[in-house]
Image (cartoon, rainbow, N blue to C red; front, side, top):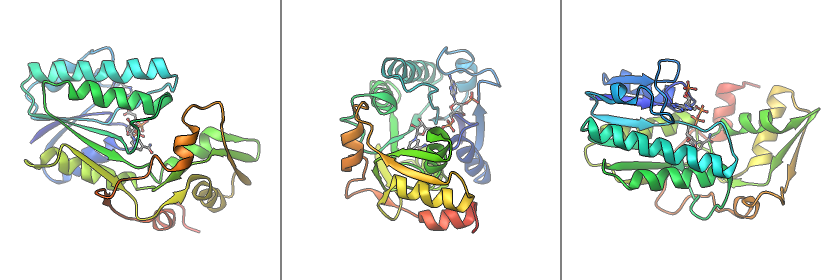
Length: 250
Ligand SMILES: NC(=O)c1ccc[n+]([C@@H]2O[C@H](COP(=O)([O-])OP(=O)(O)OC[C@H]3O[C@@H](n4cnc5c(N)ncnc54)[C@H](OP(=O)(O)O)[C@@H]3O)[C@@H](O)[C@H]2O)c1
């Protein structure tokens, strides 16, 4: 198959390209550096011409609610329009488990992303993933001040980005994949505790503190388990500890 991958320079997208190429599919990385901007629409028509399917693994640079909703909604509308013009068979989107009730920030943007894609006309398959093992790296990067990372309270079932990319690639090429699949890792984890394990392996930051950000409208939902998968979810390794051993050996 000929498959255009948006977000092909990112954590998920680059692995999807790699997996599809290994399977001898014609995977076309569409990046802004190569002149394809899914938000402005620049380069989309030519990136999608002669393609059978599109993977959307884009991410947003903002978490401000109005901006991120506009960003993801606009991308979905642009991609749908260009895909319909190019007679693309299907679009596959990576999203996040449990986000339906989240009122703000990135999660609200992803709800808008999903909804705008579902308006069609091109059929859409959505893979809702738990937070990636790699999310702990992002947390340490984003929240460290001095010698302490301040990680928001979150119940999660971390999953490897590679595992998510493999399922995403399968959803593009399988003729009869479901329209909505959830994927999560083997164990429920506390995000701060998992981030602390990573920090200990790396020797920095010295401390990881769990915080409840009461000014974040999402804080109750993420602390109370709204981001955990439902009973039908695919549960797939490696475990967080196995991932740590592979990426940051002790
Ligand atoms: N991280 C997690 O734990 C997690 C869990 C579940 C789901 N997800 C979802 O997975 C998706 C991908 O996340 P990620 O962590 O792989 O992202 P990432 O590493 O931040 O990569 C983002 C990608 O989006 C591309 N991009 C940004 N703006 C673009 C634009 N205007 N047009 C075209 N491409 C654009 C970037 O490409 P260039 O800058 O090169 O153009 C880059 O390749 C996100 O939507 C996220 O919600 C993430």
